[in-house]
Image 1 (tube, rainbow, N blue to C red):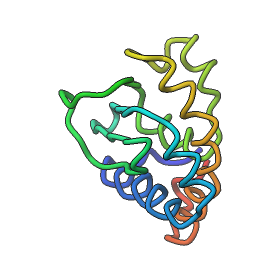
Image 2 (cartoon, helix red, strand yellow; image 1 turned 120 degrees about the vertical axis):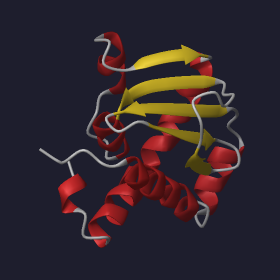
Image 3 (cartoon, one colour; image 1 turned 180 degrees about the vertical axis):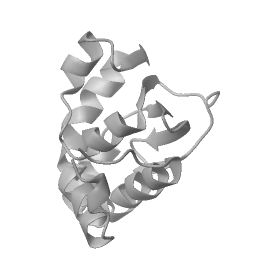
Amino acid sequence: MSTSPSAEDLYKYIGLTFEQAKSDPKLVEKFSSGEGVLKVVTTEPDGVVIIDIPRMTAVQGSADAESDCTLRMTGEFANRFWQGDLNLLLSVTSGAIGIEGKMATLAKAIPVAKELFPTYIKLLTDAGRADLLA
């Protein structure tokens, strides 16, 4: 079992994942055709990541920031999601992850976000953060 990431780990590695994706023209095209802002509010550790889909950014935010869709989960679940090790639908239906707002924004973003999983894993691996690998 991996250790739970710090809020700084989440900001850093999710943010870097989106930054690196900007160098892939196919991903840029897919994200730029998307719409909306996702807010991921984590507990254990407390944190907020704001993901602007068309701008391909993921940055530290605040709980009161505006978004089209908000997801609430533990930091461990966020880390596992970005590695492709978490069934989002099952986690939502079991109540482990909460969702508020426009579900269509999330439904459109998930298929494209899945293409970022290998980049997130590689960033963790290259940084020597095996402790965060699922």
